[in-house]
Image 1 (cartoon, rainbow, N blue to C red):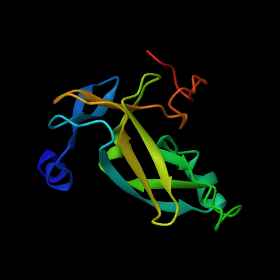
Image 2 (image 1 turned 135 degrees about the vertical axis):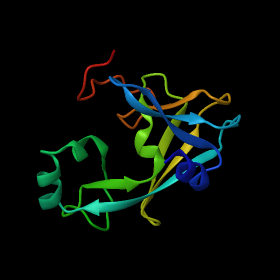
Image 3 (image 1 turned 90 degrees about the horizontal axis):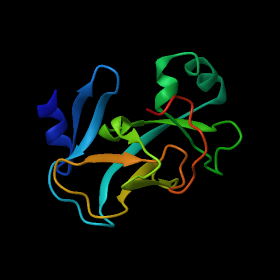
Image 4 (image 1 turned 135 degrees about the horizontal axis):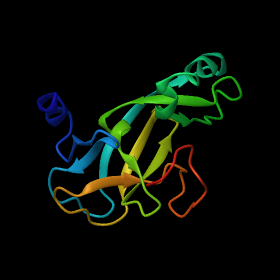
Length: 138
C-alpha cells in the first residue's frame, strides 16, 4: 500500500501511527513554506447522500463544501487523496484552501516542514480556530 501512496505524491506519505490514532501523513522530504503539498479532488455530496453518510465512518472524512454554484443542494464533499489521513491540530503546519472552479482542495504548507515530520491541519478550516471538534483531543 505504501508503494502506491509513494507513487501518487512525492512530498507526503501515509504511515501507521498507533492503534488508537490510526494513520497520519508525514513529509517524505523537507517541504518549504507556501508549497502546495497535495491537491485533493472532491466528489460533492447531495444533502440526501450526506445524511446517509453521516451515520457511517465516512462522516469523519467529509468536508463542508459551499460551492455557490451548487448550494443549497450540495453542502458537503468527500475528497479522494492521501490528504484524507492528515490529522487535526490546533497548531497546524498546513492549511486547506477550497478551489471550487477545479472541484478540489489544495493543502498549503504554513511553514517549513522537516523530513519525517507529521503533517497537521486544523479541521475547523481556519488556522486559528480553537472551536471544539467532534472527537476528543488527546
